[in-house]
Amino acid sequence: MGSYIEIGDHKITQENVFSILAEKQIIIPLATEIILDGAIADIECTPEEKNMAYQQFFNQMKIAPNDQQQLKAWLERNYMTLEQLENRVLRGIKLDKFKEKTFGPQLESYYLRRKRELDRVIYSMIRTKNVGQAQELFFRIQDDGQDFAVLAREFSQGPEAETGGVVGPVELTVPHPQIAQLLMTAQQGKVLAPVRIGEWVVILRLERYIPAQLDMNIARRLIEELFNNWLNKEIQNQVKFHLENFSVTLPENPSQPSMNGHVENTQTTGNN
Image (cartoon, rainbow, N blue to C red):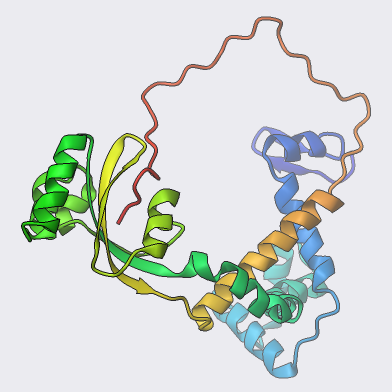
């Protein structure tokens, strides 16, 4: 028998490695690593970057930088060559450079497309399942000048009751789409008439609209989004299965799996 890996009573061989990769759902993570290896292959690192990366590696592994015996033992224990070690050590730096080089030029236009979704809002909300009660609460706030927060604590039937009805700041993708649409056009401080959203009747008041800004945190996040979008497309395009004599047979009358309990729609009105 040639090379194989033994884990307890299991042997991973050339003959069974594919079925194990598939069963353990490791094919896509493996494909991701291979695709990224190709993407960063031509990315260069400066001597300073290499020194910093190796220093971090030695510190993390608790290896003395000049102890060749310790390094040799670590490589043998992890079945790695010096070349493979360098690829691993420099991978993070190369990947960051690849992201910046590839997706940095797209950042501004992508930000402009995403900006409305990145805007944040602080708003007050009262929700109830009783239409009549919602109308009464609206008039008590609108006409009688009663305090929104006090009424929210007493009557709102969601977690926002604990904060006097205040939700946020949250991005506009967080609340229910109807709520987000209402808040985008609402006048700050004005109480909106009750509106039905799913099972709830909701009273809203926009407290503050916070436009997004392309700062460092947003830039990193958007570059990561662009990178992940690219990576998913590469996986779809590059991963091909060539299987001989593979088929799946299902029973004629399969028993249906049962689901206990229930699932709530957490996007009905948004959350804190």
